[in-house]
Length: 269
Image (cartoon, rainbow, N blue to C red):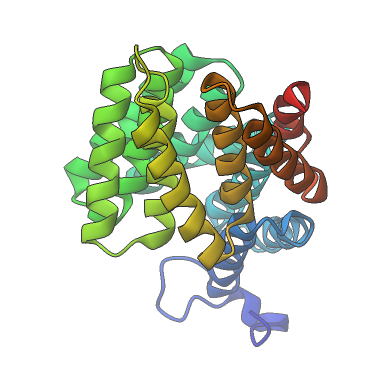
């Protein structure tokens, strides 16, 4: 990224997209997973400026997508949806199906988190279908993890649990440790909402996800696990442990400037 300056930002070096943009896309996604949102957003905006200046369709699609992604991880759903809708629109206009399926997955996730489950579910299902059709196995685990979370919010708990467990197995088989952490959290979220809840499995999966997230520096994921453990311990009538984990989650959300999630942590503190 630092090497490709000046006229070199326009070079593709035989790739399908501008390498100056692609390198920034990977960086921004990594920053989002680490919870480094201020730098991630600044780099994402820089990526958009480069892509708009060069006016390369695939690169512009990716630039809008990654800026939407970092806003989504932070929980700024309005901005996330705005950029993800632009990315999906460009991918459709320029007929780039593999890119569209990936971007539709994130847009569907954003819709689901904003309460628009009926709008999000078809996009998430399309993303999984596209992955299978094109044989893009590397993306299968995270996409079914997002679909699992949508099923949970739609109260399809057994479907959510089945997909989340499948995602864990897939990510382990393919050594996708960061994706495995998100999938483990999805298992915990779904089994804790069974009737009756499987509290033992939920606690185990939260703690496995927490350990992986801590090791990899995935602060947003770690905060979500603490929030989940806080909710779980409240249901188990363990107020001290519930308060400790919820307070940790709230402090992390506050530090990372994640007000959407902080609001969910504060009522229980």
